[in-house]
Image (cartoon, rainbow, N blue to C red):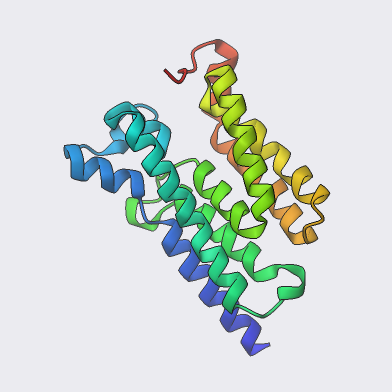
Length: 202
């Protein structure tokens, strides 16, 4: 029991702190002196970074956030043995990363929408599922020209992809709950899509 409690505490804290590293904020601040939270949507994610620094930095921030999502989950899979048969520790790590990215302690709990970091966690949980979800996101975003549409649809499909790839049930549940949370974080985007005011990728 003590081992389970200790491992759980360590996994949650480390994963949350890694998730809280504000990649987009730090890059925009170092390049322009601006606070990314005062620009566009106020998000620290790659899409908002693109508004300030352009497409190159959109991809850099997206990849860094995906890596930030994958790293603690891979560490949990490798070193946290408690509950490993049901995928407990990797899922707790993934949840903590998402919460850290969207509610970072370093930026007064105002962060990004956790899409790239979320896909990073899925890549770490199941590589093939993560690749499929990234491909779906890319195709839908390219076709519709809306990052938010690609993000929402790809992540809503993630629990089904996890299930069909025979992943542990904990991974499937994580993807389902995580997808709903990310849809919630995109509620303003969804409202703008309905009203016809959402910004397109150019």
